[in-house]
Figure 1 (cartoon, rainbow, N blue to C red):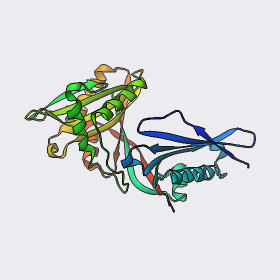
Figure 2 (cartoon, one colour; figure 1 turned 180 degrees about the vertical axis):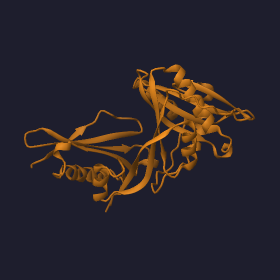
Figure 3 (cartoon, rainbow, N blue to C red; figure 1 turned 120 degrees about the horizontal axis):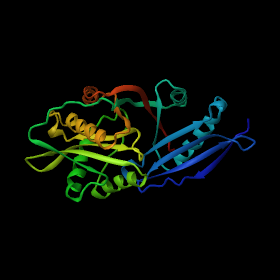
Figure 4 (cartoon, rainbow, N blue to C red; figure 1 turned 90 degrees about the vertical axis):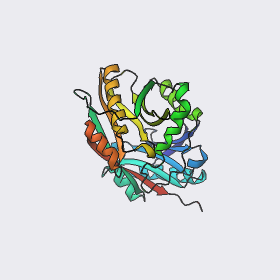
Amino acid sequence: MSIRLTPLTDPDFRPFSRRIAWLAADGDGNPVGSAFLRLNSRDSHSHLAELELNVHPAERRRGIGSQLLDAVVTAARDHDVRTVLADARVDSPADLFLEHHGFTVGLTLIYARLQLAGADPLVRESPGYRLVSWAGVVPDEWAQSFTDARAGMDDAPTGGIAYGEDAWDVERTRYAAQVIEQRGEHLGTVAAVDESTGAIVGFTELVVPGDGKGEALHYGTAVLPAHRGHGLARWMKAEQIRQVRAGFPDLDALLTDTVSTNAPMQRVNEQLGYRPTHTENRRTLEICTY
C-alpha cells in the first residue's frame, strides 16, 4: 500500500515547548495515521522529546507506524534530540510496537482512581504546620514560597530517564496556572506552611474539567525533604478531596499516577482510597547523532 507522509504545522505552540507533526494518508488521500513530536525549548530539557503516534486500527500491521516513526527519528536527530519518550499501556499493541522498534522501559507508572461518592478520608493534622489553598494563579503573597517548594519534586523517582534540571521561577509558576485557566479548566492548590518560618514546604495540585464533571487530574504532589515524615502529603490530599467535593458536586472521580518505585506516595494514595486502574511504561529511544 502506498503511504504518503505530510509534515504539518501544529498550532499547539508553548513558550517552553512546541510540536512538529506528520499525517499519513493512503493512495486515495484518506488519513490512516499521525505522529507528534514535542520538542522542549528549555536548555536543560532540549535533549528530550515526547512522541505520540497513532495508526487507525484497521490499517495496522501495514508498516504505517514504522514509516511515521522513521520520520520522527529523522526529525529528532535534526533537532539534536538525544532521547525520545513515549508512554503506552503495559503489554498493549502500542507497548509491543515500541519494544519492537528498540524502545526500552525507562520507568513504569501506576495509575489510580478515587471515586468521590462516599470519599471522606479522616486524616490527623500535622502539628507545627497549617494548610492554605487557592484557585488558579498563586496569590502574590505565596508566589515565591510556592515556587521554592517545587524543589520537593527534584528527587522524585525518574527510573532510567535523565530528565535534567527542572528549574522554576515565579514567572513560570504563574504561566503554568494561566495556561490551565486559558483552557477553561479549574486549578486548585493546597499547600502546607511551616508555622515556624511561614514558608510553604509542600503542595498538591488538582485540575478539574471546565464543566466540573467527569474526572479531575492530579498535576503534582511534593514535600520538601526536611519536612517529610509528618503526614503532610496525606493531609494536603485529604483536604483537597474535601474541597473538590464541596466545590464540584457533579465531579465523579480523581485520577493520579505514581512511578512504580515511589512506594511512599503509593501508600498515601491507598490510604486515601485510590485504587489502581492500569500501568503504563514510559519507554525511551536513544537517538544516534552521528
